[in-house]
Image (tube, rainbow, N blue to C red; front, side):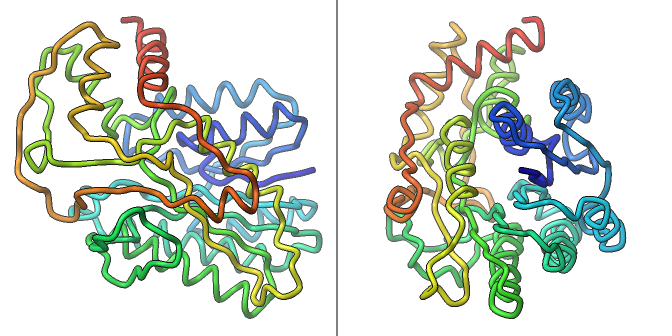
Length: 326
């Protein structure tokens, strides 16, 4: 089976593509290798994927509608799509909102407009975010909760991504599933996220920023659990004739919310060093707590995350030390 994975040089995209290749699928990966964070890390992920004979890479901007259409014309036998390419990060959306509109909204539109013409397309799976729950204060977050009060422009673009995908499911019958990810971490992670950022600063003896004076909680979810959910969803093609349009939304989270200070304590233990905590006020666009209700994803494709932060953080630290030669 041929699968298109967008954002293949990214954190979740890399792991998803690698898992698909390992089970024998053919993968077409696209990525623009932008400089939002260090390109060398993206290139290192990509180099590992290129070792697989079933992997094909095409460098392009997913929001370039002409390039995407031409690419899918060359790969008309794509059966399933995992759309993970996006401009990530809540705080950067305060600095450069236009990049989010282009990558997140323009990207899903360009891809869906080309994908709806694929003759064998079975399933379009795309990444959303727990950020869409915005100012909702009821936890755990359920897929049935209202998501009309975003707290950041990043969240607004992810909500727009969901809306755009719903339109294409409604108008053209594209079988579609959206996945709301909850704070993913693990080996080959993103340098702008907590595990990576804190590790780098602790090892350098630099203070780490702790927002809302430490009163933050996150549903930290290990990468292997997330990928199991992505591929489980991808394989659970919407087939129910009563599902009109063929569109579903799921939460993918660890289903346990952790105090940020507890996360830091586990990281300190794994590194064997104490962190210098720099307590700061709440940042614009942030939300205080995330916590996933995963009943639907467990029911429909057996999603059952198993990795605690006590297990996952040491694995990340081991990878970090090996990769950077610490």
